[in-house]
Each structure stands twice: as structure tokens, then as C-alpha cells.
Length: 191
Image (cartoon, rainbow, N blue to C red; front, side, top):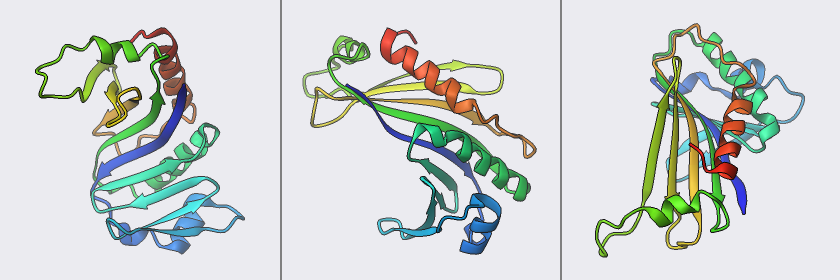
């Protein structure tokens, strides 16, 4: 069992969330004939928006773009690029592109959980992290177990861009590359 649990883009910076009004989001970001839905995160008292399977939650220090399906990733990157274009003076510290999976014992990645030595019988396994630096980003993989179900694992694949330039524009095929790398890892167990 390998199922995509979530797909998102996270931009860490100093965001002025008051800019993200319904009119501004409709006009500059979604540009859709479909209805823009308002969302409320009651735990954090945050306002967000959803349209065509993509959500946007602007916060003071993080902007999260959630993506319901893999085939919406290029549209989400278009929205991110539009945000970067419309708000060029926003200080951005990092941008992460994430795909998170759940997997069972039949997945080759489960061997990483089983082979991890125990620190002590009093401690439970939490996660293993790997990273590989590239010229423009760092490829991160974090494999963990989902508590209390110890037979279910989770893995997050992340392209991490540290201090991206204000003029940066991300290629719409970026998630295709991340998905390809994640699928190879999920099937071959090669990191």
C-alpha cells in the first residue's frame, strides 16, 4: 500500500496576510470562473481560500499552498509564481515542495524502519532523515512510523530552496521530477 497522503508548497517568509483578500486572490491568483471558497482553520484562527482543488493559507510567517491531486501541481506552481511576481518585496527565507506518502509493511521503505537500531526499549522509533544537496535545492527524505499503528509508515519527499531570489520562477514540471524521484525510492528503496 502506497498512497499519497498530501501534496503542498510551503513558503517561509514574512507575509502580509492582509493582502490576501478574496478579491485579490480571485483576480491575481486563481483566475477561475469557479467559486472561491473561504476556509477557516479554527485551531489557528486562520483564513484561507480554496478553488479548483487548490487551497491557500497565508499566515504571518508561512504561506501554504495545498494541492488535492497530483495533476494540479503545475497549476499550484503557476499560483506560487504569480504570488512571487505580485509580491516581489516579501522577504522569503525558504520554499519547500512536498509529497507525503503512507505505506505498509509491503513497501520496500519499511525495511528502513525495521532495521533501525533501537536506542533503548523505553524509546520508540520516530524518523530517519536523509538529504542530498543539489546546486539550487536540497532533496530531503524523512521516513517515519505512524504512531500508534506501527505497521504503517510515512515518508515525506521535499525539494527545499533556501533563500530563493525574489525574481525566481519555478518550472511547472518541478513536481513531476519530485514525484518521479519519490516513486523510484518507494519501489526500489534507493535513496
